[in-house]
Length: 264
Ligand code: KIV
Image (cartoon, rainbow, N blue to C red; front, top):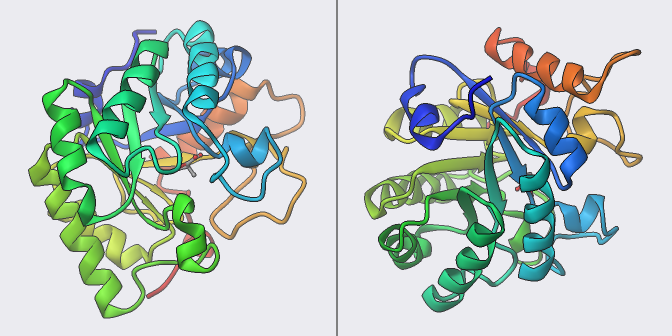
C-alpha cells in the first residue's frame, strides 16, 4: 500500500470519500496503516480517552509531541494530522512554536480549532510551510465558552458565522476543514462552498470525509456514546478490520445515517 499524502486527499474532492481515525500510539497507528483508512489524527481527545480528563483543555504541546512521535513510529501508510492544543493557536507566535514541535515529531498536517479570527494564524502557518486543517463548528477546546458539548450552527447567526469562517479559511490558505456537530444541511453547504476537503464528525453524510475517535469506533469507550458514533467492531476483528468496516460504510454511503446526524 502506498503512503497517503495531502495532495492525494485534496484531489479526491467530489470524486471519492476518505476516512480518518484517531491514533495515539505506535500500535494503533500500525493497525490504521493495515486498514483502508487514509489518515490518522493524533487528536487532543487523548486528554479524555487516555488521560481521563473531562475536556481537552489540560492537554499540552509536550503531550501532543510525545503521542505524535509514537504514532509516527508505528505508521506506514496514513497521512498524520496532529492537534495544536488549547491556547496554542491564540497568537501567531504560539501557533508557529507549537506547529514546529508537532511537525518535527512527525505530523504532516496541523489541526487548529476556532473561528474566523484564526485568519492571521492560518496565513502565518501557510507561509511557514505548515499544512493546516481548521476545525469549525463544535470546537471542544471552547467547551467552557459554549457551556457544554452542543450542536453548533443551528441559529441563523451561528450558521452564517460558520459559512463565513469556512470561506475566510479557504482564502487564508488552509488545506482542509473539519466540521464537528453541525446540522447536515450546513455541512453540505460548507462542503459545496469550498474546494478544500471537508472532514465531518457529527456533520451528516455529505462531507468529503469522516473521522471517528478510535475508542468509540472500536467499542472501547465505557461512557455514553454521542449520537454521531457508531461501533464498527465485530467479534474476531483485528482493529484493522474494524477500521476498514468504517471506511467501507462511509464509501458506500451507509454511515453516517440520519440517526447519527443533526437537523437544523
Ligand atoms: O481530538 C480529536 O479527536 C478531534 C476529533 C473529535 C475530530 O478533534
